[in-house]
Amino acid sequence: MRVIAKKMLREYWARVPATKAPLEDWHQRTEAADWKAPRDVIATFGRADPMRVNGRNVIVFDIIQNRYRLITTVTYSVAERMGVVYTREVLTHKEYDTDKWKDRIQ
Image (cartoon, rainbow, N blue to C red; front, side):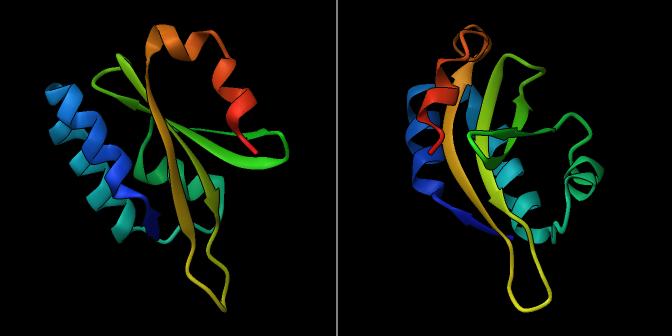
């Protein structure tokens, strides 16, 4: 998978250093993956939560035992092109629970 944008992850772990190692691990594992469907994501990350939000394929990843949530959108791989994962934002569990993040998925 192609991950866009690692910069957002780096900016987050600069503010919250405890997230650096888990987000780097997520990035490495995701770039090495080839997801064609939500089941492939779950095979890579058992605690991933694929869903549809505003017509988009969204995957929410638990970071540091559910203390943080990484929100992404995904275009799955098909025969003629590699899949793409767009990092949207990292939220605390409390921020995630407000569901306001869903309004930012376009």
